[in-house]
Amino acid sequence: MKLKKVNILKSIKTTNRNLAVLIDPDKMNIESVSSFVPKINQSIATHIFVGGSEVDEGLTETLVIEIKKHTKLPVVLFPGDVIQITDKADGILFLSLISGRNPDYLIGKHVEAVSKLKGSNLEVIPTGYILIENGKETSVERVSQTRPLKRNNIKAIIDTAKAGELLGVQLIYLEAGSGATHAIEPKIIQKVKEDLNIPLIVGGGIRSKTEIELAYNSGADLVVIGTAFEENKNFFRDITKDQNN
Image 1 (cartoon, helix red, strand yellow):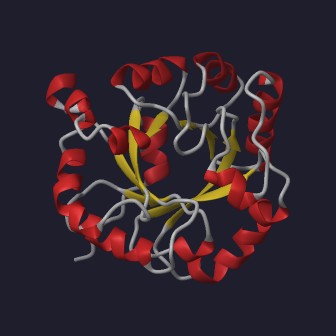
Image 2: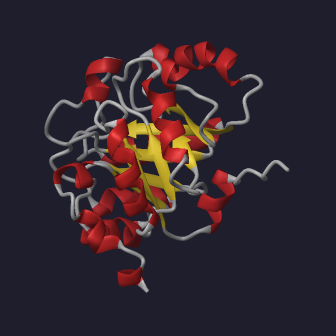
C-alpha cells in the first residue's frame, strides 16, 4: 500500500513554528548522513531542505536517497539549478529570484524544469525568493549574476514580497545568503510579514536558538538553518525536543 504524501505547504500554513535544516550536497559527505540525520530527528526540525548554488549533477539525488533512509521528515528540494531536481524527494520549492532581474532565474530555469517535473510525485510549491545583502557576496549572487536588495531599503523589500504574492507565489523566502555574516533584522521580517497573506520563510546567518526565536517572534513561519551546524557541530544540543518541552 502506497503511503499518502505529506502536504508540505499545508503543514507550513497550519504549524506556527516550522524549522528546516538545509543540507548542501556539495558540503555533506554521504558517509556522514547516517550519523547526522538522527540528530535532526531528535531536534525540533520539521523539514529537511536539500540544495545549493553549485552542485554536481547526480549528487543531489544520491544524497536525498540516503537521507530518506534515516528520517520520516519531509525532504524538500531547494535547488540552485535544474540538475538538482529529483523525484526521490517529497517536494520542491519552485524558486523565482524576484529580488533580481535575470530572466533565467525569473522564468527561464522554470521552463527547463518542466520536463523533469511532469509525471513526478513532487509537491511543487511556487516560492518568491528574495536575496537581501549581508555584507559580502554570496554564491547566489555570483551564480545568478544578480544583486541583493539593500537591507536599509525596507520599502523595496516589502513591495517585492507583496508583488510576489500578487503574482501567485505561495511562499516568500527572505534570504541573507549562505555564510551570511548576520541574520536578517527582526524589523525587516516584521514589516514584510505584516503586509503578507502567505507564509514567510527566513534563512541565512541564523546561528543560535536565540536567533531562531527572534525570527519566529518577528513573524517567520519557517526558519532555515544551515551554516549553524556547519560551524558548530553541537548546535543541535540547543534545539533538541527535550529541551523545548
